[in-house]
Length: 502
Image (tube, rainbow, N blue to C red):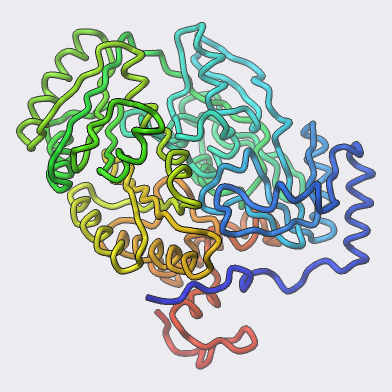
């Protein structure tokens, strides 16, 4: 296992000196109201990290603009002074995607929190990036509509952050990720130029840059407006909870459901560690004696749901389910899902800290991965409950550790790195919906070769030639990959650079 290099190794060496720092603050204060510019340590401290609290960096300043013109002016100032900018929504990213730059500005978009229009006939809504995910569904509810992507953090996370990370949720198997539910994005480039991706129609001419922009982690532009699709609420939704006495059997059941042509509205798995962690917190009615449980949801007309529930139950029993419970009311269905969506806060009750991973593998190899994680628990001396989107093989292992113990922190990082690298070895990828951020830079060196990473940088340069938008995230530098592979780099130069690498 390779050691985990210091994140600060990738930070640019050319940082603002005191004179430019003073010029920056003066320019920001002149462009924005006084209450929109924060630069004292006691004011900027709350922004030093996002959901990945293992990495903390104090920014040079935090700005909280209230209008698009103010965002433009901030970007123009930072572009002129060559100051890095990190856009931030609610700070719920679990990969360090909105971790500040030590000599940069945090651009907080929390005040852009208005739903501009909601068209029930077109089934669309135009919202600002600071609107909470759940708030869109709440506003659409009187019209019998809702916004489909539902990450577990939906009560707090913002649509701008969802666009940056291409967020999903427990119902993404049937209804898709953010990229499948957004029609149009308006954004500002680093120099303040406004651009639009997509359109209000279902398709737009030219290159599909909307799909490239969604999931770009704030590295290409700053979102100022989003047009989202709304979908009708189903007439009925019911959830099946199936218990298994073997983890492998539950994994085979996932593949069997898909093979039978059943696409559940949601298909989630929790192992015994996870159910025993969650049940005292959420009282969801989980079978804590089972080695693993599956949550399978069916939605549609009452006739469709009844038929699909019967087919699901048949497949699950054939796959080895020892117990099947079906929600009999909407409140019971929500109770089943409340347990799943509260897995992360439940982890906070049983451990000082947790490290949530995000690897994706082929469904047929889920059993292999979970067995391997059990072995890693002994290797690193840390517990790891598993709760994840089984339908698309998107794993969320929760590594429990004590963040007051530096050695335990190191073991947790190494544990997570091994999980991600095994995901790649099993034919998967290092991330499904949490993004790369700072967390997975090393594993990007494992998954992608130098030529592939250069393509990524090419896209970055096309939008942000100076590399000032959320720098040093997402795509690792050659130096980082060289260091992760234990290759010596001196003065920023590789030895024998003419030789083929990797």
